[in-house]
Length: 237
Image (cartoon, rainbow, N blue to C red; front, side, top):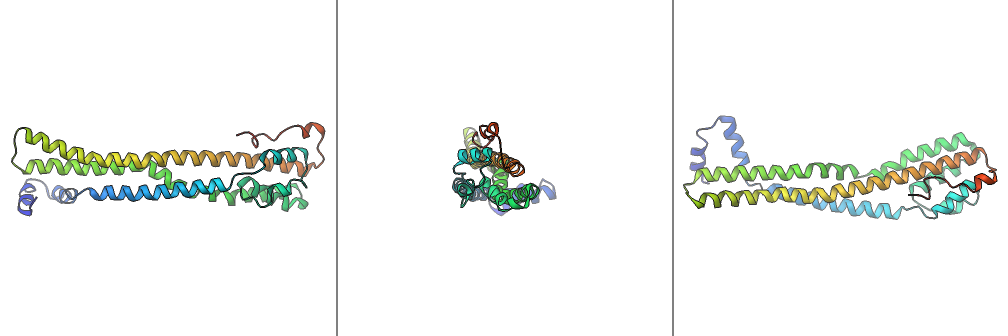
């Protein structure tokens, strides 16, 4: 649309409306480029988090649970040594201060949990925010496209089927932004839910191990019944 035609079209609207129309009548393609950039960032975060979680799986979980149940703390050290899993890190720190008493063990493991958890939560807020707001970004692009389509329709002299063709073409192009927004949001939401659930399971297992280690530190010699009782939440889930 040329400047004289645009000025004539905006002559009958208010000053603020005309200023906003000048902004919204620009191309909405920048919204698509923004969504593409967010999609690339989302995929990068998903891959990074997947590698991070996979590299920090707890090894020998069943044997660790059994040794804790039996109070075999000396045999527990080689099992957790060198592991980077959240559960293993907490047990490592607890064993390191075992000689200072159960109270110190409990405090150190709680501090380790508080220090380690943010590493697992890194970038998860980005995925959650993107999954919640990407559809709205796409909808914003669609609204801009529809505004431009109807404004262009009112500025040209066409009749009959040409009107329908012009409107439908403009709307179909505008709806692409909504589709792209949904395509960006869905993987982000799925990944956010998966990583959040994985973190929750690890925190639960870590807390179960921590409680078992504190109990073993308070009473190193467990009876036969305790030896046959598994630590709940460690092997399961």
